[in-house]
Amino acid sequence: MLPVNPDRFLADLHRLREFGAAGVGRGVVRPAFTDPDIAARRWLREQFAACGLEARIDPVGTVWGLAEGQSLLVGSHTDTQPEGGWLDGTLGVICGLELARAGAEAGIPISAVSFEDEEGRFGVTTGSRVWGGFTSLAAADRLTDTQGVTYAEARARIADIAGEFPDPGRFRGFLECHIEQGPWLDQAGEAAGVVTGIVGIRDMRVTFTGEQNHAGTTPMHLRRDALKGLLRFQHLIADRFRNVVVGETVWTTGHVELHPGSHSIVPGRCTFSMQWRDGDKQRLDRMEEIIRQAIEDAAADTGLTAETSDMLGLDPVPMDEGMQQALARAAQAVAPGRWRRMPSGALHDAASVAALMPAAMLFVPSINGISHAFEEDTDEADLVTGLQILAHAAAEMAAR
Image (cartoon, rainbow, N blue to C red; front, side, top):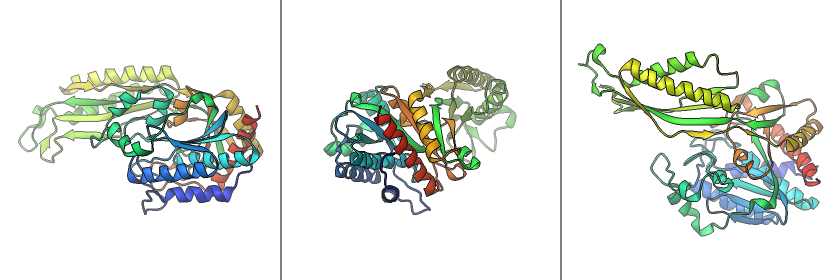
C-alpha cells in the first residue's frame, strides 16, 4: 500500500470545504467558474506544485498535477451544484492529491486532476468531455447557463492562468473515488463499492402549447390548459413503462415551467425536462420510443400541440475489468467482507475518460443516501477506508 497520511488527507478535505462554505452544516456553494471555484482551483494548483507535480490549469479550467513520465491519473471534480455537499467530487480530487504525495515518497508516479464543470452549470461533465473528444471547445463555448452566460465568457475568467491540455497518452489509467450518492452501502453497513459501470442517460425538454386565457372566466370544458399535457404524459409513461423497466431504471421530471406563471391565468405553455437512466442501451432506446409516443398521444388527448428539444444521449460505460479486479482485491484487504460490486446511477468524469484509457471507480457510503444537498456527508472513517483501498490498488496497478 502507498504510504498515505489519513490526517493530512482529512485536513485537506476540510480546507477545500472552506471555499464556498454555505454556512449550513457542511454545505458548499461552488459552481463552475464562480469566485469560490476559481479560488479553490488556484489553491489546488499550489498543492499540486508543492508535492513536486507539474501544476497547470488547462483552457477549460481543469486543474492538473502531472507526474513525470507515464503515470496513473487519480481525481474527480471540485465544482458543486448551486446547493452542494462537501464531498461530491472533492473526495476523489483530494484522494488524488494524497496518492500523488504518497507516490512521490514511494517512487511511484501518480498524477492528480480536478475536472471543471462536472456538475453541469453549462453542459454535462463539460471539462472531461472536451478533453475526451466528445465535445469540441468551439461547441462548448456556445453552451449557456440558466442566466445566459456562455461557457466562453465564463472560462475567460481564468484566461490569465490557463495553459495547454495534457496529452492523454502520458497516463496508464484513471481512478476516481466518489461518494455513492445513494442509499445502498449505508443501509447495508458496507464500506465500499467497486463500480462495474456507469449508466446511460437520455435527457430532453418537452413543450406542450395550448391557449393562454383568463382563469376566472374561461369555462373548464373550453380550456386548452398546457399543464394538462404534462399530467396526461406522466400518466401514460407510468403505465407503459411497467413491462419495460427494471428496479435500477429511473426517470425524472426535475424542472417544470408554466407560462406566463400567474395564479389568474390558464397556462398557455408548459415546458418540462424529461430524463431517464439505465445501464442497458436497448432499454434506454425502448423508453425513448415510449416517451415520444406518449408525448404525441398526450397532446392529442388534451387538444394541445407538442414539440421536443434535441436529446442528450450518453450510452452506458463499463469500467475496465482489470482495474475492477485490482480494486476488489484492495477492498477485500482493507475491508474484508464489507464491500460489493455495483453500478453507478450517476454520471461521472470517468465515463468521459474511459474513452481515452482504462478507467475505474470506487464508491464510499453516503449517509442516508443524501447528495446534491447541504446535508451530504460520509463518516470520516469511511473516507479513510476509501483512500486506503485506492492506495492498495494504485500500488498494484503501478507495479504492472
